[in-house]
Length: 124
Image (cartoon, rainbow, N blue to C red; front, side, top):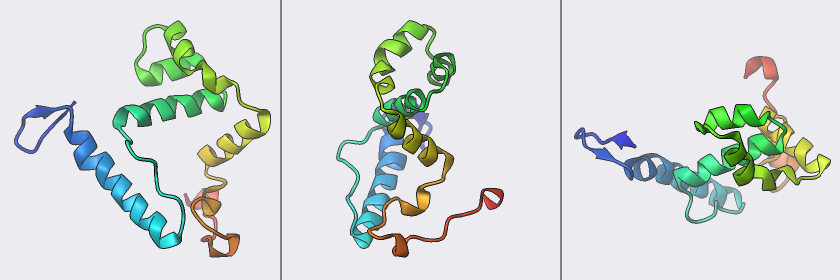
């Protein structure tokens, strides 16, 4: 829940003011680049679920994931996100590389030659 410009509390303004604006911009860029747009219906809750699922898939400690989400019961966290543990090792490695920023240059581009040069880790 975030406060609106007038000071009122709203559970909707994060989605309207932030998520929808980011999705609109990302989809405009995807269209310009001829790539697939983001799926419909992205919400803060779905982004939270994706974040937690990626943490689990790349092998983060369940206690760490639980703390990131503010859960008090690790069994609940494992129940909800354990489906992400069933990933092949190559899939986990691809996710780890993506999270570490190693594959960003290739994401969202049709061909490798249209991708911008990768940023060196020291410059990031």
